[in-house]
Structure formats: C-alpha cells, structure tokens
Length: 362
Image 1: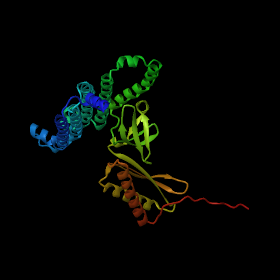
Image 2: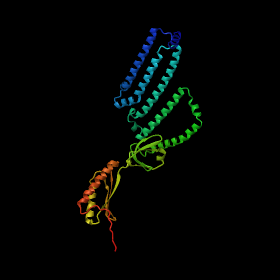
Image 3: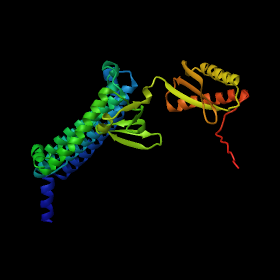
Image 4: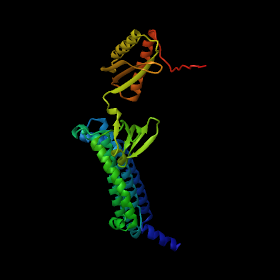
C-alpha cells in the first residue's frame, strides 16, 4: 500500500481529493469548450472574416474556408488537448516533463498548421486577389497551376526542414553525412533540373495550355496536367500518357486547338459514263451548297474535276471550316458528305467503284 501511495504521489503530487477532482473536471471542461470553439471556427470563421473585412463575395468565403478553416480548427483542437493535459493534477516533476512534451507538440502543430494553410492559400490565391490574371498580364491556367505546385513544394521542403530541426537534428550535418547517397541524389537531380527548366521554357513559350489538343513526338491527345517533371496527355483512346518536359521542349508541338480554321479535303469518284454537262452541274451545285453553310469560309471553297482515275472521274472538294474541335469538325464533315450524296443522286450518275476487265485470249 505504501508503494502505491508513493507512486501516486510522484504522479499526482500532494493534491487533496477535492483539489484533485476540481483539476480533473476543469481539464475536461477546458477541453470541451475549446473543442466547441474549434467546431465553431470551422463552420463560421469564413463569415466572421467576411464581416470584419466587409467583403460581399461568396467565393471569398468559400476560398477562405478551403484555405484556413480546417487547419485552424485542427490547430485549436491541439490547443484544447494541450490546455487540458497541462492542467491535469500531475506532480511537479512529472508536470515539467509533460509540459515540455506538450510544448513540442504544440510548436510542431503550429508549424504544420501554417504550412497547410499556406499551401491551401496558394491554390486559392486567384480568388483572394480580384482580377489577378488581368493585373498580372493574363496568366494562363497552365502557368497558374505550375507556379502553385512550385510554391507548395517549397513550403513542404521548408516545413520538413523546420520540423526536423525541432526534433534536435542538424539538417546541414545530416545532408553532409549522406556521402555516396548525396552523390546519387545529385545525379538524379540533374534529370529533375533538366525537366524543371524545360517546363519553364514551355511556360515561357506557351505552346499549349491545359485542355488543349496537341500532337508531340507521335502522340496526340488533350493536355490534362503539367508539373515540374512532365506533362500528362489523354489520348483519344482514353489512355493517359506521361511525357517528360525535356522531351516536349526538344520536339515540335502541333497545337490543334490554336487553329483559327480547319482544312478539309474530300475526293469523290463518279462513273465514267457521267457526261461533261452532268459533271459540271454536280460540281456547281456542291459549290453552291457549301457556300450556304455558315460554318465554312466561302472564299476557301474549291470544287473541281480533278483527275481521270482508273475506275472513276474524281472530283476534289476542299474547304476551310471554323469548327476546329474534333467532335464539331467531324459533325460538319458528315453534314457535307450527306449533302454531296443528295446532290449526286439527283443527276444521271452515281459513285464509282473499282472495276477491272478480264480479257480472255484464246
């Protein structure tokens, strides 16, 4: 029994039963009150900031909530735990150790709170600054996302360094002590640096943006994402391909989305029995039909009797159209070809097919 009393004395000190219970209850109340404050801040801090700054836009509140509300709420929960634990009725010796431990937990939590909040803020920065793209000269979406990822990466690196030092490690000595591992890292960093600089070149030249339809290095598809190392392209077969920035910057890029108009060539073959007058009438009516279509640039239309093919009289139809997106482009091409079929069916001719004559010599 004496051993138990001695142990309790070391853990809890010389508190009377009444003081002991008051301390315990006070600790629980402190924790519950601060947890309530954390929940309140998570839900209402955006509206509080909105009223204090007299801002009417709802997108600001949404951006604030996404950036700061949850990290702030989580930090207040840590503060609640800190306050509750340090208020418990420990003995003087144990209380000093517990307080030192909780101080370290609180400092690390504060570092992580600031880190996460800054990362979220970087993502939502355009919302906080009104018309930021116009003020900064019309930054494209690709540049915004690239810079956001760069800022987040730098914040993470600094956070890791600060947390490591908080645990008592010398980061400089740690890096120096890597030895061969450091050399390996340096060699690997050459590839990272190459792709990073290539990414900066891509952003400066602006050959494409996220969402553009491009062809590069034999690949064709829609740009979905760009980061420090690579560009992700979604092909029309729905495959996602990752291409290093260095490969893209060293190759020619065709940006189909930037086309102001798109050229289409169609060859139709008519029967050799078609008369000259019928051939001319078909060409003239096709030309007139194309001229009446708003999607087609009228001065680009070309409808001519092109050549005597082996089994047909070939008519070449060429035009430039304004829809450049694949879906709209092929819909227009289908519309044109249906119209050509209707016109050909009106005349004393038809589409030719390959034929050959067999001569049987006896």
